[in-house]
Every structure is written in structure tokens, then in C-alpha cells.
Image (cartoon, rainbow, N blue to C red):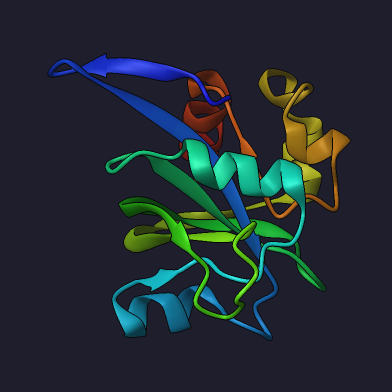
Length: 145
């Protein structure tokens, strides 16, 4: 489960969500003003979606040809039935864009950062939704500033 930090009695969780930009890019996300994160068909990723709370932050990661963290998203609605399937095992979470990183943080630079050696992204490369610690989140944000 993602770590949580005290903030006005609310504990924030931190996550990384992956999307191929050819399918749904950061620019699409910003244009839409938010979206539900659908199509997750992996139990570990689904369990992460179920653990998310309103206000949690997520690193928006473009996978594919140019893998990089491009922005910050925020959970606006907690897990509910995925409207793209009738299978009750699968859920979605609503996100809104918070801001694009000034400098996108490439996978190569993530691999070189000592504070990120245990980032789940480096160990579970195919997982589309994963928890990150506040330390990981802060390191990526610092790199993107």
C-alpha cells in the first residue's frame, strides 16, 4: 500500500499511473480536465486503485517510446465499477491533472537517481498502477522542477 502523510488530519497516498501517450497522453488528460483510469486488468494494479483516496497524488508516466514522468495527477473520486466492463472485479478511479513537470523525468534519469533505486517502476516494469513512497514521489518532483 502507498505510504500516507499527515496533512490536516488526512493521510496522503502517492502513486504512479502509466499510460501510453499514443493511447491517452498528458495533453489529452489536460484537455479533458480529468478522466477515469480504466482498462486495468491486473489484480495488483486493481488493488492499488481500490486503495486510493480522494486527494492522493499520482505521478503521470508516459510509457512506450519515450518513457518518462510528465506530470502530477490527483484522485478526485475513489474506486467504482469500471464502466468499460460488466465484470465486477474491475474498478476505475477518477483523476484530474494538477500540473505538468517543468522537465519531464526520463526512465534513464530515474535509474540513475540513488533515491529511486527501489522505486517499484524499476522492478515491475509492466504494472500500470503502483504505489510509491513519499520519498520516491518527492525525488521525482525535485528532478522535474
